[in-house]
Image (cartoon, rainbow, N blue to C red; front, side, top):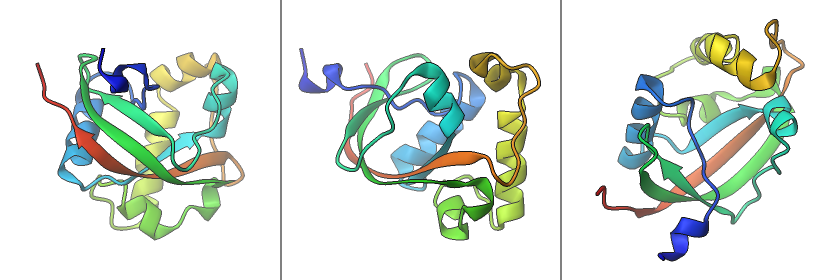
Amino acid sequence: MPAHDALPHLEFAFPGPLRDRLVAAVLSGAKTTTTGLLRDYEHAGDPLPQAGARFLVPDSGGRPVAVVETTQVRVLRLADVDLRHAVDEGEGHRTLAEWRADHESFWHGPDMRQALGDPLFTVDDDTLVVAERFRVVERLPVS
C-alpha cells in the first residue's frame, strides 16, 4: 500500500463541477489557499490542519490526484480575510467582494446547510473561518 493511502483527505467543495474546477486549479498551481468554516470542522469533529500536515486530494470520483502539504493555517473572522488569500484560491476573483459573494453562495447552499445540520445557516462578518495555505508535493497518476 503506498504511504499516501493512509493520509487524511482534503476535499474541495462537494463532488461535482465545482470540485472538478478546484482540483484542476490545485493541479495547475493556480490554487494555493482554501477557506473553510470553523463551524464545519467543529460539527464534523475534525481537528484543524496544522502546518506541515499532508493530505490526499481526491477528485469528484474519489480518485486521489495529489498530495498537498499545509504551510499555514489561520483562524480569523470572515471580514478579516485578505485579498492575497482570496486571489490565491485560484478561482479568478479579483476583489474581496467577488470572493465573498461566491463563498457565501456556497456556504448558504443546501449541501453545506445539510452538512452542518442547519437549514438556516448563514455567515456574517464575525463568522470564524479557517484560512489554509498549501503546496502540492506530489501529483498522482490517475488510474
